[in-house]
Amino acid sequence: IKKVIIGLTWYTQLSKEKNNKTLKESNFDYRNNSLIKLINKLTKNKKDVYLIGPLDLPEFDISSEIRKVTFGKEKKIKTTTEKDKFLKENLKSINLFSKKLGEKFLRPDKIFCNKNNCLLGDSKSFFFSDNNHLSKHGSLKTFKLFENINFN
Image 1 (cartoon, rainbow, N blue to C red):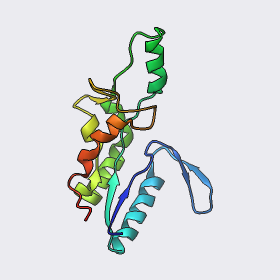
Image 2: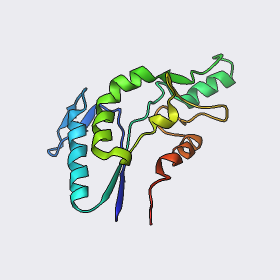
Image 3: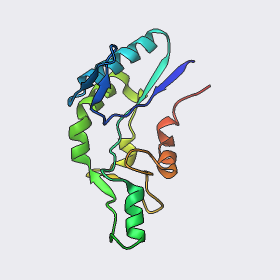
């Protein structure tokens, strides 16, 4: 293995320590330090390391909301989230790993967010299949993140 791409759930506040103790954190220092240790260990072992950054998630289950609209229980579905809120929660980590990895820190927020909002979909479809998984359409949009990685 020459290249390692790390992906994780960024939004959870629960982490497991080595002794299997559950740790709840709001500033994500433990998670970030653990990632730094992992990246350093992999790099020391001559691995080319990439990290997929955080992505703003809908605060609701999109498939449930689509059903409500389909059956007339709701008039419309929210299609954006506030970029400022996303950045407030993630800017510390984004800055840390942007500095550590440069272009090897892959940022889906640059694909899914514009100046003011993070988009949950476009005119073709939603980017999420529920409140924390990308849909096929959303996954295909992320291919841009990997186009500069030579997998040979």
